Length: 262
Figure (tube, rainbow, N blue to C red):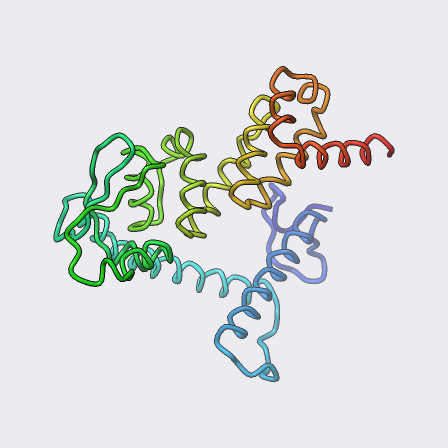
């Protein structure tokens, strides 16, 4: 029998003859379950009384929930547009109050208040005894190039980094995010690098993940090694990797033995 939702044949609603195919039925259940979870999260966040009677759960309920989500997205977009002037202030150098110098000798001007609210490390730098007076000197960032620091700062202002910049500077930005305690940037970098791990770069990624305490990235890298262990373990770079990272090599060996025993 044709499904009353996805069939190419037009159907009017005539119970009880109308039926749903398995895909539409499962899809409707999934949508309703998702809406119920979102509503429960909202109740938890707003501390709504748990005993309060919930509305009947059906597709009309799901549709109303989706409409609310659409309105929330529109409101968030308006707020983000309103906050867009912050990145404009950085890009134009409007009322900046700190100069940062990178490893290539170039400087970038920024706003201490933005950096301090996004990074506990920068906040500590600006609040240290040596800088309690109005700060007119420079802050040296020796581990980053001019472009890397610029992308780091732009993320503090707008929480965005272009994909091409992430592809080129993602590893350095993850290191910086870990050093300067910027968890949101760490999460963004980790997710991007996870999607680009391959047998050819997995050893570098594993080393990076260990240095930056990126648990998810480390797990992804080890899984790639296990899936392509012959290509990785017998590569030219593995011997150098093993000599520099003895504990990681032991960890790989243990994981590999478990896989081969299955």
